[in-house]
Image (cartoon, rainbow, N blue to C red; front, side, top):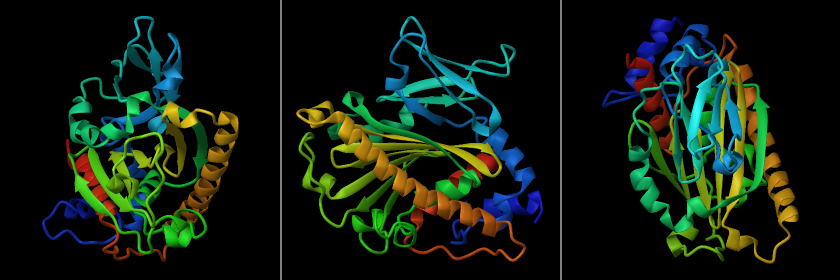
Length: 322
């Protein structure tokens, strides 16, 4: 399948009668599409770089490398966040933005602000007190798959039955029901019910909030998910056409740690995350191997996967916008 044909298929996701089909297999392996994504997707989109705890002290820095170009976010001596590209001072400084405890970076120095697109999400997440939350656990891994395979997987819970039968599937209902609301071209809200309401002792959550996983997906590859007293963040950053860096962590409100063994809780959370991440990694790497086969074909999406369609529309808009 040629690059032109792939882009034409992407355009169909923006039509009123968009086909509820998976991306063409070639979309995960095409070097030409990868080059387009480097410029049109990750060259002008907001990438979730870190929780600001990593950037608390003056001079503290975090480097992410979307599409292989290192972008460094630094806490300046005046307290502001600034960013620079490793390609040198001739390139305009990347845009950087801090929102409720998270640092986002955009290679496009003239990018429109992200915060206005998160305004409604911010109101709905007020009860979780994101600016007050503190990191409890963190991870950084490398997966051998195309970034879109990992991101579309994160946009639905239907896969839990197959990849997470003894972990995630134990707290989510069979079938992975999800309610999707597109906030803007940058932000999508995903709501999923739990089997049983989660306990919440530190935050003033409603019964509905304790019974629902609230996920905010920031295009192209970042997300925040509220689970009872904790918030999990994850960023899937492409390093190459078939390789991504997965960064993430668990945040909790400080009051939830009172009287607790923080080190023991950290180990417990990191071990749990490692199990789930390994299940996802093995599944995504297996999919990558399959899409590279000459026998690979597109498949119909389940009605349980509206989040995937939302991601495809975001991808189509980014690729087709000059």
